[in-house]
Amino acid sequence: MTTPKKPHGIPVAAGTESPVDLPSPMAPPPPPPPTTTAPEPAPEPDDLIPVRPPRTPLTPERIVELGALYRDVVLQDDDEAKQLQRRIAAELRRATHDDLHPNCPFVEIDVPQLPMGNFVKINERPYIGRMTVRACTAQTILRLVYDARAVEAARLRDDGRTIDMDRGALLERMRIIQET
Image (tube, rainbow, N blue to C red):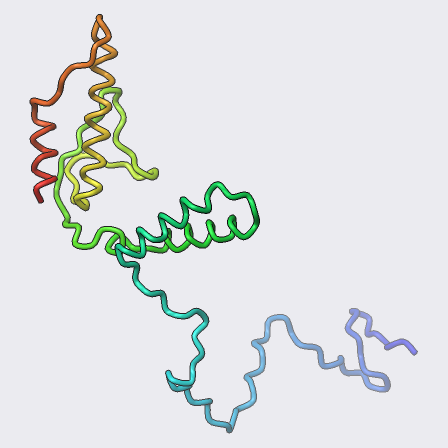
């Protein structure tokens, strides 16, 4: 049986002349029915089950142990050794800077532009101008600057010998950073 239609195309209930109750696309949705139950209380912290046990901080001894274990298994070709390598690498990647270098102070350095016009980058992070970084990062930056200047100086010399840069402002900066 087909539903009769009015001339303008609105369906009507069988036996009546009024349109079928269809939701209007412009009408707001009806409000949800009121709930009479109280919300569930929050669980106690002792009742929660941790997803992952808390990570113990790495000690310098543990880092040395992981490094030795990694060197022992890195040349092995079986699946267990590969899995162990991945677990060691993951544990070291999760380590914070304070785990790897405890009590490493912050120092302020001026990072010069390299001779070829670019800047020092470590892990895709550029270091430009006056910056406050950890002492170990400062040593790495200044070593990269020193090496870049030595390469550029050797490239510009006619005889191909490198220039001795033991005397200069760069060595003084490195000495100050190493003392802190």
